[in-house]
Each structure stands twice: as structure tokens, then as C-alpha cells.
Length: 304
Image 1 (cartoon, rainbow, N blue to C red):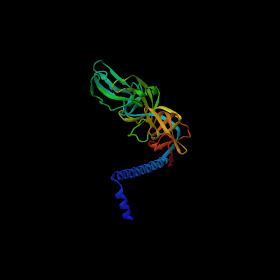
Image 2: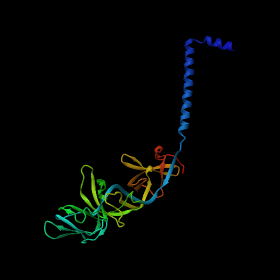
Image 3: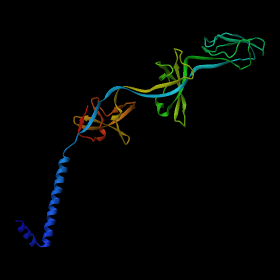
Image 4: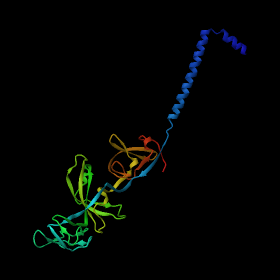
């Protein structure tokens, strides 16, 4: 049989043999190409689901909060000085004691004009250390002691100009100090500067801090927490659910086995949540994980 095949091949002209080989090669290539196309077509009909995690919309308070650090000062604070040259006749106070407005602090026998000069407290407050003793010679304008009113403290801090629309007189705030553990102090904005700093683009705020327990002292560092804006019953979603493209904002939601993209309007941004002003319904399930692999209408598999 093999001999017959060899004899038949030997009778074929070289040109005809070349044609047969070319036809066989083309047939094999066409068959291989057809198989690849069939395999690709079969694969393209298979839709792979994207694994995602979802979160329900939270209904709660949205707060725009500004936080900063500043030092406090006494609301009223003066240095008590001598008005004349003379000798300290009598000291009427104990260092660190409270004194009422009009009460006598000390008296000086004047060498400028014959007679006694009495110095009285111009306001209620706490006296500091005495800088003189009875019998000491004092000169005009020499420091005798200090007087501070600690019932209220004043504090100044700067806010970015973008917050100007939310600032108003009597806006309340809270302050804490690492030195005084577990105590929250309440205060109010007293007035707002009339100009914006051109270099820092900030505006200065002057505020009053209540010190009813008399524990605050001038120079203390205070952490300020100012609620500039607050909305009740706001739609809140996790920050990671939001997609921002070309200054527009989008959220993917799960609708059965499919993902649907929605354009949204955002409001207040907080540490972990963002307020959605428009574009979502309260029952929507927002996709928080896996949305980077999604397209509108993608098949999804919810993991939670």
C-alpha cells in the first residue's frame, strides 16, 4: 500500500504538488481561525458579575465644622501702677485674692503733693502678686500689681474666607484644653473683623469664652470647635461611595443584580460621610466597594 502511494506521488508534477500543499495549508489555517472565532464568540456571551459591597443611606445631622487652636486672654486685664512718686503706706489686699469694683487696693503717701493717694479696683477681678511692700519708695507709673477678670475670657482665631457666609455674631462654639481634662467650655462669637487678610485669605474672629468655674487662665492653649452649618434629617452616604468626574458627582446603586449610576448633588462634607442634597432615594443601596470596575448596567454580586 505504501509503495502504491509513493508511486502515485512520484507521478505528480512538482507544480501540481506545490498547489496541493498550498491548498492544504490554507484549509488548516481557515479551520484554526474559525475555531478561534467560535471560542471568542462563546466567551463574549458570558457576562462576569462584579463583586460589590453596599451601604444603606443614613438619615442624620450634617455638620460643617471648623476646628483650630488659639490662646486665651482675660476679658479685662490691667496693670495697676502708681500715679505719683511717694511711699507705700498700706497694702489692702492678699495676693491672688478676689476684689470688687471700687474696693481699695493700696494707699501711697505722695511726695509730689502733700496727702494720701488711694488706688481702687476699676472692675471686679483677681489681684496678682504685689510688686511692692509697705514703706517702699515708688515712682510714678511703677508697677504695683495686676488685676484680671477671669469670669469671661477672650479668644481670637482666623478662619478661611470661604467660611465668611456662615459667620455671625453670637454663633456658639465649644473649647477644650489638654490641661483641663474632661471639661468643655462654651462660648460665642463677639464680633468679626471687617477685613480679610490679603496674604492668608483669612478673616479674624473675636469671641468670648465663659469661665464660670474660674479654672481658665490667660495664655492657655484651647482647641476650638465651631459648628458653622447644621442640617437635620440629611441623606448621608460613606465618603468612599462618591465618584467625582469633571466636577460632577456620581454614585452607583444596586438594583437587583445590576448596577445603576446616578448623578448627585452634594452638600456638607464630614470626616467619613457626605451629605447628598439631590439624586438619591432613602431606600437606595449605594455601592461602596467595587464601583471602580463598574459600568452603568453591569452585573453585580452583592457580598454583604
